[in-house]
Each structure stands twice: as C-alpha cells, then as structure tokens.
Length: 223
Image (cartoon, rainbow, N blue to C red):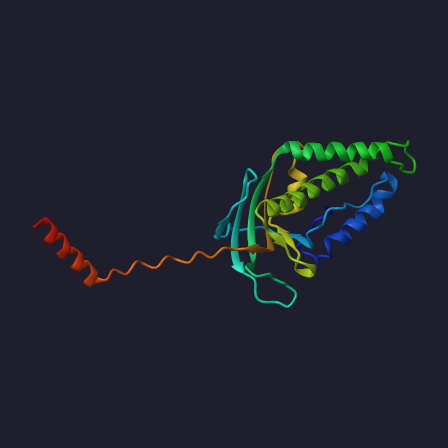
C-alpha cells in the first residue's frame, strides 16, 4: 500500500512513493514498510465506460472481474504451459468494516509509537491525520485488488509488467470517502491465468448402411 498519484504527472513506482511517505512519517510513528508484495506502478484516471469482457470466477462478494484483450508476446512475460496473459477489468466494493479495522490498527500503532517534535509522545499532530486516512484507503485499494486476484487464481506479472490502474481519481475518492463505509472502485491490471480451452465435441457420424441394415433386421423380427 502507499500513495497513488494522479496520471497528470509522470508516475514513479509505488514503492518510491511509499518510501517518500515513510521518510516523512515512519521515523516519528515507528512504522516499518509494508511486507506484502505491491502492484506497481499504480496510477489513476477517469473511466468513461466499463469495458466488455469474459467473466472470471471470483469467490469474494461484490467483485466483478472480466478478462479483456490478450497481452502481446514479450520476453519479460514468462508463461507456463496452459497459461495466458491478459488485461483484466475489476469492479469491487470493499466492506466498510475492512477500512474501519485498517484505520484502528494504523491509529493504534501511531499512538503507541508517535514521537513528533513539539508534541507529546504518542500524540498525532493534526496535519498527520489526513495522511493516515490516505494511507488507510490506499492500503485497502491495494489489498482489495490483490485479494480479488488471488481468489480468481490470477498471477501478477513480474518486474515492470506488474501493475494496476485505479480508474477513479484517487485523490477525490479519498477526499470524499468516510472510513467505515463501503469503498467502491474500478481498476485495470495485467495478469497470468490458466485458461482451459474447451474443444467442441464432434457430432456422431451415423453410417447410413448400418442404419438400413438395422431397419431390415427389425422388419424381419416383426414379421
């Protein structure tokens, strides 16, 4: 998780943004960088229309994943037998209880470890609180995407091909969001998937001579 920047400016890798955040906040809060693998880079832009695609099974409630176009062959994308690489569209609602729990943990760690100059130990200055909300929402977005991918048995790509795009204006999304309420968003990402190609059954070929012989035999029996 970390800061998600606008697509209006060049996007550094998310991990760089996290390091900027932690360089400012972590020494005072006593935090360590997240250990969960990050989808990088994440950018945001406005989605005009939901794309069509093939539905992908996901066992998480309020999640819609669609398989879009196949990715072009690249040396950086290593596929195993039976795997394909595609773009995917995700529509998801994260339960309000999830962000509520995230925020509780963040505030708990902050109060326990906060040591800002000019403030009592354990006291969070007013200017830091919006940053905690931003960190909470961005953590929920990143974890939500990754949880959906895992449930759908999708494997993130490696290196620079590992990415996710939040399709809303993330700054506006965070600004208008209230911790503890459902968090709805859409995203696009690239991933690998084992796709089972169903071969259509060939119609049974009926030998006309055999049928005629069976009919004759039946007539003889009836006689």
